Length: 383
Image (cartoon, rainbow, N blue to C red):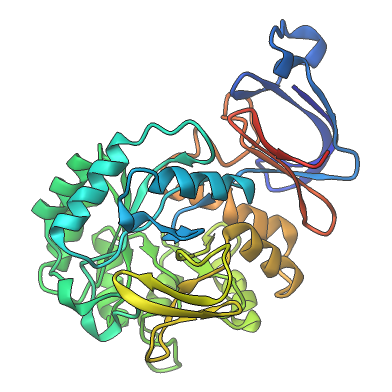
């Protein structure tokens, strides 16, 4: 396939006018005229005049959409999620678990390992958000199943998943947390999450090998001038990446702008943290076994605690640009390059480069999706 006249977001984080060549499932550098294309799809020409071409988005922290939750672990759960996410430009998915029972977590991992879906987005990993968290900052997680960090249990789950777990979240102040980091850091990205850790404890966790912070500012002590907490410790450690939910509910636009200034454009990762109501109307839903009430763009428990988002990652990226005044280049990188690098899949996806999977979104100047391709296959098109 030849995509002509596009404004392409390149791996060096700059937009350039150029063509994009796709052969089979991959991007290729060779000139269209010099490649022995054989299939009708390969021979196709797409005129993308006036359109941005960006890599398919990578969501490394979300729970569900369109009535499905990754933790449901039903036969078609992942398939349904993948099909919706692909249509909204999220071509690589790393859905998150919750703080639920050990048996339920095991079943989720088994279902993920068995998944062979070839429609929609690609399942590239699992984000294990619970159960190694702090009850004091559990947020929308259930306190009933909170556990101390446990290397053996993590290893069991990871084996059941086929080694799909890419992120594991912990409260570093918990018993055994530092030993846990040392025990798993070579297998998985360790993230600080749902925590009461102060600056010193968080800094120690980063020294031990943690390198990520889950939904920055949410479910952790605030960043103040005398108690910088997890946020201050993350700023001080150049190895640490941080997640931002730019749905317009979780974080004030001024704080989003400040975060990009403090961390730079290579350490911020946009996530959706979407739950099953994403893509649906207002009403009553569930998250981790708890009732969630959705009104507009806000999802809350019955006590008012924010319970994830109802906004997909593409819309979060779009909102970051249009409402929060983040540079388009920085917002796109934070939803593509940065997450792909953080979970170790940048050799396959995250940029439009020779040899990588042809995951691609075409969008107009108002950031409306015009076409989506996953592994070179057209998922959606208005062209």
